[in-house]
Image (tube, rainbow, N blue to C red; front, side, top):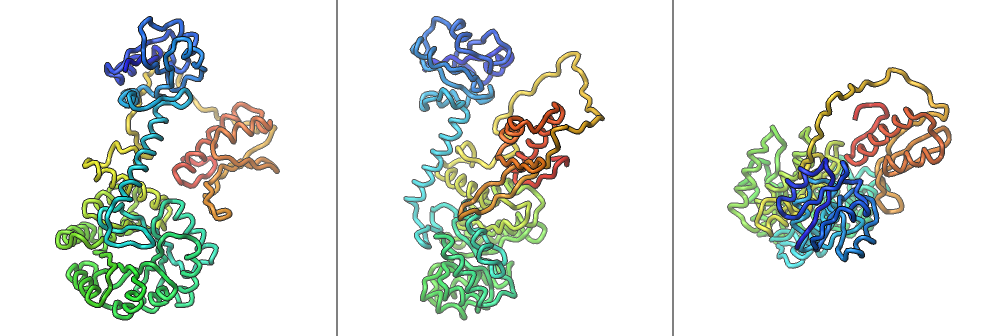
Length: 492
């Protein structure tokens, strides 16, 4: 395919470097590529015939008339020159858009393709255990279990909302965690309240055999955790209901007791089994516990493995995306089946969604036989896949200085806040930016729409105040995006 890429003078070198002989380059007589117009392009076109002309992704003109005149598709390329090589590699397979920049179009197409592939792989996968039609083990996708901490002491509404949030974030299994002082009545109420809230499998997490039996009577799908101290007291109901059981060692560092407990469970008739060698926190045996997982898988290549990633993310002061991704990669290598997180602390918020993405990445990588990169789906949040060029310091640049003066806007002041995402009418609603002005409150998802509304309503009269609002509203938008709290005038 013969392709012509259109750019401006400032981006010429970056465009030529990124295109790397994959297209001809036309440099228009403008500094900024985004200022490309149909008339300017028409005057500058070569006589040479092309199969496709890519204009800058940020160009806002209507090129449809020119496209008809020259009988050549004129479509939006990427917004940034650094993405051009990536875009050109798909030119033979993708129909580019006249309205959506090629980089964004490809990102969505690759994501859709990745998700379609996952559905296909999961459909034809084999599994050792099936719960409510969901596959566990074998070559099926690793499933994400989200724990509702202290479920027995939550109100029905609190419990339902927590479950709906987790399911919306991608949880495959909901685990009801019960504290030591939970009663049998509270257990029964929690399980009965959780069941109508979702169709995904439900588990309970407790060592107390009385609570386990109560949950089993209420129709729970999975129980955590069985060992030699409680197994015989709950075996009858587990066997009768064909309930899936997660087996743990009697002592976390004793892998032999784990094998013994699994053998005993099978001998007494418990058939749907997951093994949990217990992942330990950093500084408290993490390396040793990983060795136990590898040892277990070396000796037992088929029993599905439970991998408690939350034991690490909750006790490590590091951004959870990278931790969850790395641990999911380790889980993939030992063929784990369940990735567990309570998403309890503020720093771990988002872990369910991150683990779901990671589980998809690992399955795609395994199918492709490659490292988990360039899959069409990723966990990059602050880091860039492809860095853009930095600007150059101009000669005689004026040193910027902030003003020490502050003037009250006669139109009034604003109090800016953000709301947390919550469940409304059974659906998860993302958080919003709130700008309060006297008796009015403006709510929006982005800084632009809130500021545009403020200007349209005439609620700001000073340029310095408008600039201030723009800064604060963008900080609020970023806080929403990165799931951080926000406080007006504080550093982000």
